[in-house]
Amino acid sequence: MKWFCRNDIDGFFGLFIDNLMQIILIIGFSLFVLGMNSEPGFLFGTVLPGVAISIIIGNIFYGWQAVRLGKKEGRDDVTALPYGINTVSLFAFVFLVMLPVYIETQDFRMAWKVGLAACFFSGIIEFFGAFVAKYIRQFVPRAALLSTLAGIAITYIALDFANRIFAFPLVALLPMVIIFLQYFGKVRFMFKLPGGFVAIIVGTLLFWFLGYGDTAVLGRSFSEFSLSFHLPKFCGGDLFSALGMGMKYMAIIVPMGIFNLIGSLQNLESAEAGGDKFDEKSSLMVNGLGTMIAAVLGSPYPTTIYIGHPGWKSLGARAGYSIINGVVIQLLVLFGFTSIIMVLIPIEAGAPIVLWIGMIISVQAFDAVKKDHYPAVVMGLIPAICALAWTIMSSSFAIAGQNYNTITQWANFAYAHKALGFIAMERGFIITSMLWSTLTVFIIERKFIGAALTSVIMALCSWIGIIHTYQITANGQLLHRFMGGNLFQDQWQFAVAYLIVTVFFLYFYAKEKYLAKEEV
Image 1 (cartoon, helix red, strand yellow):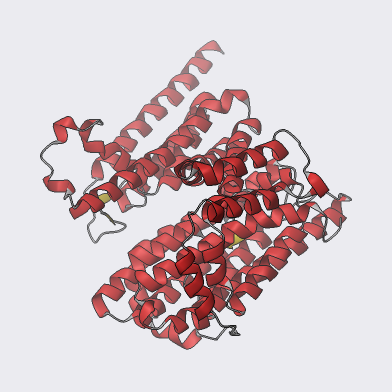
Image 2 (tube, rainbow, N blue to C red):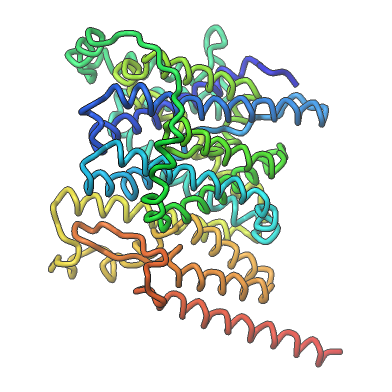
């Protein structure tokens, strides 16, 4: 097992584009949502260096971990766990934690401080969750873990980037075919160039030669660009000064920490299904540690083990792609190149790589489970699809300026009951996906006690607001109702329904025991 191989270059481009897009999102949200455009130097001098250092720490560890596993097992084909900024937490912490603070105080620094506290609390949950994760893994079937990943992959990865590709077909369709030719058709390009590299170059050239690029923006970016070096800063004092205010947002932080823990666990399951069994405890502890380090060094954005290990393994990437990614991201951020790359390389040029990875993850969910469990995999996809449907719908309401609660033309709406089912599934869809897939496996295998226990867990999660529970506000926006101060939440009917289902399973368990006794 070597630290670097040729295919690590290919793997690097995929992971780098993914990480770079997260940084682009962070820049956009920070400047235009959280008010840092009044002092952009704070973003580039304090926040982004913290982001970069948190990425490289994890990338180096997981690269080393892959080399160690390869040497231990006498193999040369171990692929490091992909790692970077947690996309789900990025959105949650921006819009559900920092933005409310900024609206209340009109102080982006206070919003940033509370974001640091939220990030740090999330890291604590992930770190200590490493000690109980194996018990979760023993209870949850593989079909449940992989189908949840597949649901995210087919919706928020594959469909999202398919939208980007087909919105600009002259730019992105040829790069997509290039990716498919190499990774599905096993075609090799001239000079043995990696398909990911060829796709990005071709897409970028098409973007500019066809006139999609804004040369005026390009000119301004280069004229305003100046090299500047920014070392990460210790922000522990800012973090701890906001712990009290951060406690107000535990209703967001705790579910997100749990989701991140379970998501990382699922990604470890995905890696094991692909042949690389990494130590759970150390993998999850470093994941949580990376998030805490990010917060202490000025980044309010948790890090995580990424979805997509099967994709990187299929590329032939091993340990080096992770390390190269961390080093390149570090250099780009510390020397201020990020804004220029944002202007030069369109997301559409790298979108086919991410689409392909989403497809590979979805295929693996079926390939790595028993055929009898296919229905459980499909059931695990449904909450993610519902979540994406509601995300698109709610965005449409916001753009149209429509108040969800006062729309009078629901009779002409395409979906029954004002799409309330989509909304209910969107809340905590990662947990919902895993639990419903687990329940389906227990039903298939006639393990009625396991099914009853799963139903009780879903009833509890519904009652306290981890799944299903929500409050609809103007423009179709949703508020989390996690432990909303009331013993009985507005959506108590979900908890009651799951308890009724529990009694149903217990009846069938008792019936089978009785019939077995009669036969004896």
